[in-house]
Structures are given as C-alpha cells and as structure tokens.
Amino acid sequence: MTTEQITYIVFGGVLILALIFDLGLLSKKGKKVTIRQALFQTFFWVGLALGFFVFMWIENGQSLALQYLSGYLMEWSLSIDNIFVFILIFSAFSVKEKYFSRVLLIGILMAIVFRIIFITVGVALVEKFHWILYVFGVFLVYTGYKMFTATDDEEFNPQDSKIYKFLKRFLPLVPHDGEGRYRIVENGKPVYTTLFVVVIMLAAIDLVFALDSIPAVMGISQDKLVIYTSNIFAVLGLRSLFFLLRGAVSKFDYLQQGIAIVLVFIGLKMLCEKWISQVLDKNTQVFISLGVIMICISGSIFYSIFMHKKGLPPEVKE
Image (cartoon, rainbow, N blue to C red; front, side):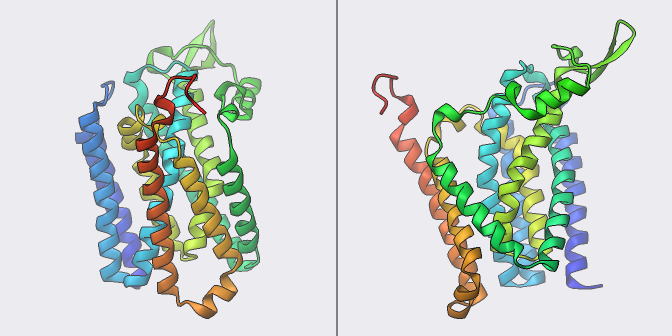
C-alpha cells in the first residue's frame, strides 16, 4: 500500500468519524445553533484540518503538507464569500432558524459530491491538456479583477437567479416550508417546498463558487490529494462558519478585495509558471503563496474591522 493510499484511507476514516461526532454530539435536529456552539464546531473542523496537515507532513513530507495548508486557507477564505450568499438565500425564502442546520448540512453534502465530480473532471483535463492551466490562469486574473471592482449594486438576488427560475419552470413549487419537509402532497399532487429549493440552491451556488476556487487550488498544487482534501475540509467547515459569522460577515467590507488580490496573484503565477520555476524551487513557491494568502486575507479582515465602512450612517459613506 502506497503512502498516498494510506493518506486517502486516513482522510476518509477521519471524515466519517468527524461527521458522526458532529451530527450526533454537536448538532441537534430542530434546535437553534448558538454562537458558543458554532465557535466550538468551527474550532473542531479547523482543528481537524490542521491535524490532517500535521499528518500529511509526517506521512507525505513538508512540500505536500504546505501545499495542502495553502489550498485549505485559500478555500476557507473563499468560503466566507459563500456564507454571504447563503444568508441572502435563507432570507429570500424566509427559512426558519430551526431549519438552518439541517438544510445547510444536506446542501453542503450535495456540494461535496458535486465538487468531487468537478475536481475529478478538472484534474483529468489538466493531465491530458496541460495548457488548460493557462486558461485557468487567465480566468482567475479576470475573476479577481471583476471581484475587486464589483460594487454593492451588483448584489445577488436568489429569486432572480437562473437556478431558481429553472426549478420554478420544471417543478411544482409551493411558497412555504411544509413544516420542515422538502416534498409534500397538496390537492393530491406532489409539490416541493421552499426548503427543497434552498437545498438545491446552496449546492448549485457552491458549485458556481467552485469555478473560482478549484482552479485557484490547482494554481497552488496539481496534486490530486491536495486538491481533494483541502476542498472537502473547507466545505465541511462551512456550516459551523455560517452560524459563527452570519451576523458579522457583512462587516468584512474589504474581504472581497483581499480575496480578489489572491486570485489575481495565483492566476499570474499559473501564467508565469514556466519562468518562475526556473528561478524558484517548488518549496519556495509554496511558502510565497502561503504568505500572500495569509497576508491578504487577514489584512483585509483587520482593515474591514478598523474601517467600519458599513457601520457609518448612509450620509457619511463615501
């Protein structure tokens, strides 16, 4: 059995045990999640991801472990953007707080399945057509630029989205939650509730975000183990992060710009990979990437906290 196979087995075992622990002990059906519980769950998932980083360092070496950590931090920071959209979706469909946890869990598990498929296809394409990395690089630079220059007027409206319009066109939908059910019978016909719509939208929106995040991780590492594990660990921590940050995420006014700079940096790195590799070895590149990610994300969060732009009265805003 190879080192990579052992790592995959450990990763799978840890995830199964963690999900059982999270669902069985940390979460209770139909109960509101408090800030304290969300903080504990967030520490749990982040601690698990960092513990896996230590395991990878011991089992697979320093280089691969640092690639994993860089990829995880990249995904984790991008997931904060997901949370803002998730909040908009819950608000648009008037989801009751007691259903948040269960709806998020199902949506996120669906998102993981979609991401695994997406990653598998993406890795296969890159292995066969290496030039696709340059396409990803251009895409990341363009996405980063658009994200950096985006304004508040471009806010996402879930009920105007193509996903919702598609569901509304092909499925019989009802404008209520069916008392916590996803599919009910009305007038002798099966219909789908708002909770069903929200679950599908959470998974679909995460896949849209994956169009940015997965190429970004590929810009850090083309190793399948790194891409799979960093993505899945980050997505599994989304639920607890949602409950922890849902009241504060709107205060991170400049986080989007921090993420945008990281995307542009990684995109340029992918485009210039041939020349960069002639000057810097792989380990140095990983250290630089890790440093840029940490500085940009933490810097944009702290800058947002100190500026309090959205906390000012409307007439004082720039």
